[in-house]
Length: 318
Length: 318
Image (cartoon, rainbow over all chains, first blue to last red; front, side):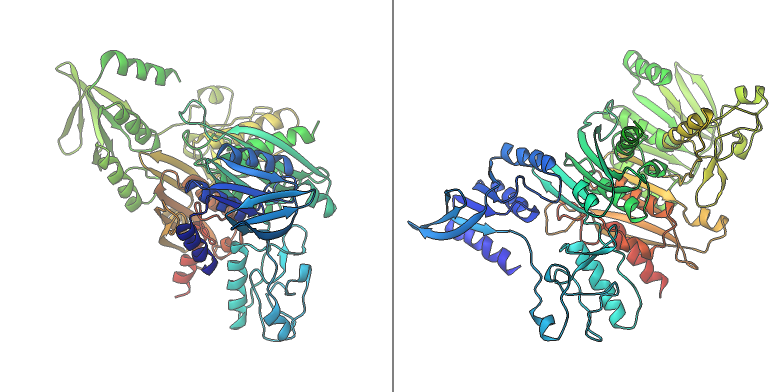
């Protein structure tokens, strides 16, 4: 919060004309949008080939195009090596003789667990150096619980620990740690890495595994894209969204979904329908069994998530 | 479809100034909105004490107020006994000397199963005179399948037949009947009566049981209302929605939910998160375990559906 207020003060008092954001994750993207709304020139520098690495690269490119349509400059596949003062401004240097001048730089290049306090208390670290906890959010130190961005996160699909520093996860873990600390017995039911972000006129949502995660976890992933209307096209205002469904070709199990759609078309809660389905280990086929709501201005008798699931099944059965 | 086109022709060629709609269900309400958009005076006459009897009466009153704010006249608790021609117009008479004059009348007072063809083929009728079918959508006549508004509907919570003529249900049943008719073996996983409707600036969603249904099915229902912001209030544009969660006080099982919120706040897909949870027999408490998406313009770290579920648990534990 302190960082955000200081950031805002700098914008107001120093009126930078060009801000460079190092990191194209959702924090960097949200900040890019906020700065563009203030009319400030923005460049995002990202090491990966596309923004938002929590979605597939080609979908990341679609998000990138929306950013560019809104005047954000993108420099992809570029590692930053140094930042220095230069003629009253800031100079960024990177691999392959890359250089760039900015009035202000925001580094939003990922999160690392803050573990000093826990280490001092004798806690063991686990996945990616985060504090090791069991599903009751207990550390190895008796009566010491931990939760949030500092701990490893049990993943519901892989049934193993991961590192997913998200506010939603922190809230769940904190509630469980608190309940258990006062004598309760509740366990963390796991993360699916569900996430959404609104960028200009689009919303992007994702949950569960994509192909790469799925392969790493021993599945035989199949991903199928569908372009579907958010609601009945005869009713004014229908807009297309792209839904990518990932399932296990062998078992038919639903593993993940990614959606890019227009703001105002319930993309974020549609990704949550997939999240609820994955939570319960549903097959892709079974998504069509869900009794989802329909009214012409908001959906179709088969909701877009169900049309996308059915498209997956058709490809699988070929 | 033919009715809709004839209705539109009448509006265009005869330019009625006042249309009376008999029936305050979602068809009547959607037509009222469409007519108001054309600047036509509209009166809804409904036998029940409030519109939209698929939600609780007090929530129906809230919907009624939104209709009235948009110029729809409501006559509630009024049974219609006759319609007659009167001085070149139409006259509606009802109980307690009620009378009303209209240029056009739309009767949208519920659906009844059309069973003549099936009866002729020897099919047995079941719940509310709808064609009796098993969960494979088979009638009692060998090799004859039936689906849609003409058949009884297996309800997932009561595990018994009901009559829920909705497009979503018809599509599911039709797909199952078709698959089984060509040698498949799939069964209908049941309806929860999930439904949504957009009326002017509001969206109403409902799924599962309210108190009355729950009592009839042998549960000990507890319903708790929450008024929650659709997204983080520090982010511009946050709007309040009312969520009523119904659960079984004895077992903690989630039985139903009703939401009234502003258009554009993902009400319809939020009701679907409840629908997915009920589909899987989740407890109200377990709704907080779902890994739902969060971004400040669209939700909170605990989604409104989870805040409403937590409010229910607090009241239950008192």
